Image (tube, rainbow, N blue to C red; front, side):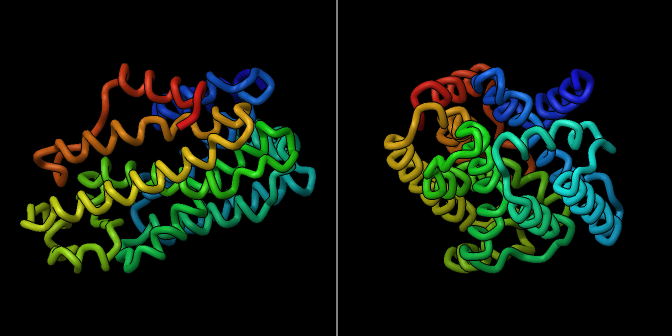
Length: 279
């Protein structure tokens, strides 16, 4: 168990430091469970980087689907994440359907299909970012009803949009554009120009609209979270970095070629604060 935890924690620290910090704010008994959930998402989101063609990625995602289904049938092991994930499922009474939806969402990452509408983006982030926050709340509530669905949905949208904006350079370089087509069209921006690394005149307006959308969801999440149990705050702690991340994106003079990141100190402060007092 310790080696599995160490593996997952290292993966998380390297690939998603905000969630890694959030696990340190959780109660000791929940730490391994949250680490398993977040490390799983790291593994799923990394599939695109480890393949040369989409079909290979679909096979890999199917392996994860089957392996997680096995946990619900009493199987165990096969990967350090799976060694920890069974405990998280039991502790939070986590529904298998949530993992199936998460894996389905990650299929989109394997292809270069456009994100046509805001509704498609909401569905994608709801099944990934939002679902992981809700699963974390179930773990922290020890399988009870945390009444956190609305807050998790808004927080997932806020963090998801901010992360996609900050990683735009990396996504465009590999031929992907997560910005909804309807937003691009509204500001006269063609997805192909972004993928080519050009800086169209309307890009600033596109980013401003996305940032405004993320800020609105962040405010809504904070308002709902204020009425929930403080014990749930660690599940939302990674979202504490959203405002700083959005500012970094809007300050970035070349978001198509430079990752919009924030300093480790700013990240640590924002995540720690959200874990203590909410959003």
